[in-house]
Amino acid sequence: MSTYDRIYDVVRQIPKGQVATYGQIAELSDLVGKARLVGYALFQIDTPSSDIPWHRVINAKGEISYSPLRRGADYLQRSLLEQEGITFSVDGKVNLRQFRWQPRSLGN
Image: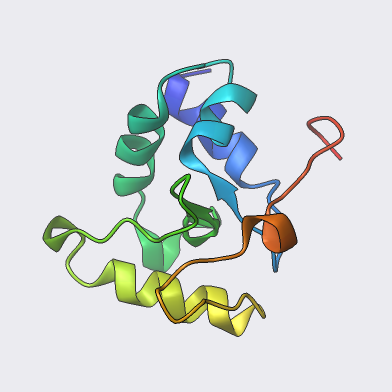
């Protein structure tokens, strides 16, 4: 299994209405300290046809990582999260205490 496939397997387990951080996904994928690699992997996803809930991964500050390279997908990300009931503060942050995924173990 490739590194990206390990990342995608973990991301697929994030439940609707919850989020995880890039660093959290890295740790759960046995890639401690490689949060950027998670970002690179998620950037490669063909979002319209994928079953990977890429939009549920945000940064450690509880924010969407905006970038012009994402060609508007960051605004789509916020919309998809809001459709799942995730709320944002006035400064654009998700309350990680409320919405952060806390897996007991992978596969649950």
